[in-house]
Amino acid sequence: MDRALIQFICIRKTHRRKPPVDPSSPFNIAEEGGWAYCPGGEPDGHRWFKTGGITRAALAKFEWPDDEEAEP
Image (cartoon, rainbow, N blue to C red):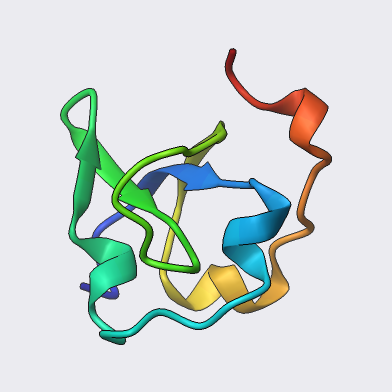
């Protein structure tokens, strides 16, 4: 998974505040044919932000934008 680029990140604040039940679940979501990441592993209610393609390792340095910067 480290080599796969993450195209979308869920930036909904409520999804960032809780850890996922299953640590692998944040990466099990595919959005528009690309990998997507939700830090809480939530199945729905996302606010997607297009990353332009980042690695899993880069998530540690990701600067989270505000909810308003996400896709509608």
